[in-house]
Amino acid sequence: MDDAAMLWRWANDAETRRNAFSKAPIPYDAHVAWLGNRLRSEANAMWVFTDADGPVGHVRFALSGDRAEINITVAPERRGRGHGRAMLSQAVRNLRDECGAGVRPRATVLAHNTR
Image: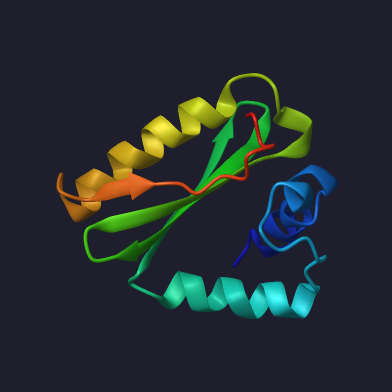
């Protein structure tokens, strides 16, 4: 929960909202409640990635059976440097370490989201 405000800012970034299925801004109280539920749920796995320069982004998986739906956000100020690919690769390794090799990550992406 220490990262709630940062994750909320990233979630409400204009590019993030443009590439989300729901375009509406997320109220802070709703975000905090959602995050608390996700952190308590065994059906979710989430990692916040940092480097020497600070926060880079986060990857979250919503687990259902052997499937893991991917949600990824790169911090707005850190985009365009390959961080998304690096975070996703590490997050998939983490997920398989925690949940087993049989888990199948997948992402649903809007057609205009070329990244």
